[in-house]
Length: 90
Image 1 (cartoon, helix red, strand yellow):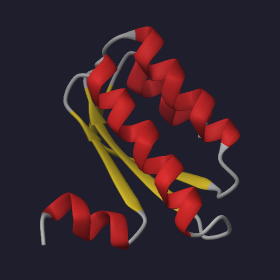
Image 2 (image 1 turned 30 degrees about the vertical axis):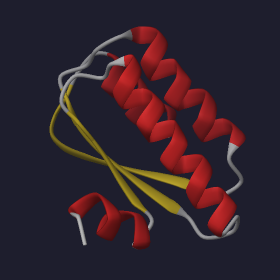
Image 3 (image 1 turned 180 degrees about the vertical axis):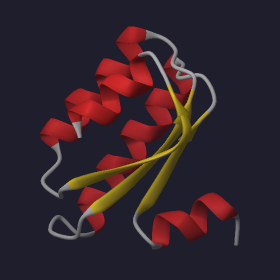
Image 4 (image 1 turned 180 degrees about the horizontal axis):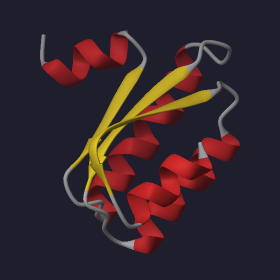
């Protein structure tokens, strides 16, 4: 089992590296999938990022507002720029 698959079974998502449209799309898809699997269990979003594209980060924030499960944020090491906005939003 891949690391990302193992984390998904534990309802954890990791955002690492610069936040791009692609990484935001993957994060959004994972949050929507976890909501579909169990709409009441919380989701943990781990952030280790130097920032990135504002629009991509705001897509993650919007999805955090839309999904029913609570999204808990954990910051690791560096969280700058739009990653800090996501962390503050959670």
